[in-house]
Image (cartoon, rainbow, N blue to C red):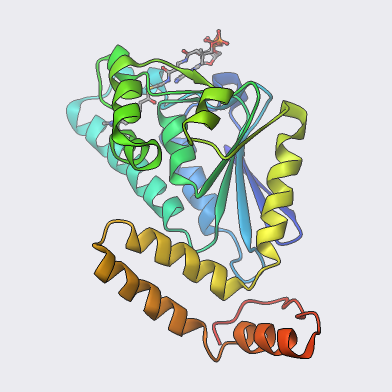
Length: 261
Ligand code: DAK
């Protein structure tokens, strides 16, 4: 029995964190299953991933407070490392990952959503970093990714105050890209993923890598990263087919299998 299910919808994989009785809170087993679910995806067949939570109440209500409450310093550190390793793997996963935030995204839940490339949410979503109220700092990247996404002033306000924000405020500050009625969230996430999945796979992967790798570099170095990944697209099937079809006014033929040539 895994705490994460995988469902394929064409070239889109929908991964669902399935621990609804605990509002999908992250314990070491859930984190291990999440890692295994990503690692188990066939990257030749899947072109985009949607990550969501089971039930209609919660994406992820945070790291598991019960599990953390009895941890020693060493265990806490190991748990923090396990979470950070999984979230870094998702952030640098070759395929785009869309978080479909269907309710609570608190603490580790917000941090998980922030390790995805794109966040869409339901109108009942609630975001926040409540950790300082529990006597800890955000431990899965919250002190680092929130400021990068919404600016340091707003991130500090959210982290220091432990205030939760609703979907409309998350949209206003740029934490999410769109808000949908709860019942329409997943279909809209899959629709966007399907649109992404139809584009040239090498180009999409290289865009993600260029944007992720470049963000922490000075612009002179960042454009070098872009040049390299731009150059990598040439002589690939996608580039030859994409440009050839534009010139001959044909529709590019979708490729069933990803190959790096
Ligand atoms: N952990 C464990 N169980 C949780 C949980 C959580 N985070 N959130 C909810 N649950 C469980 C509840 O205990 C309850 O279980 P039962 O009592 O039924 O067995 C069940 O889910 C339903 O929850 P409620 O009955 O409380 O449901 P309500 O609708 O009344 O309230 C709520 C929903 C989300 C407002 C409430 O459950 C809540 O406040 N939950 C905690 C939210 C929270 O504080 N999340 C942040 C957790 S801290 C680090 C590594 C990681 C982190 C930090 C450091 N290092 C190692 C450095 C991350 C920290 C966090 O994420």
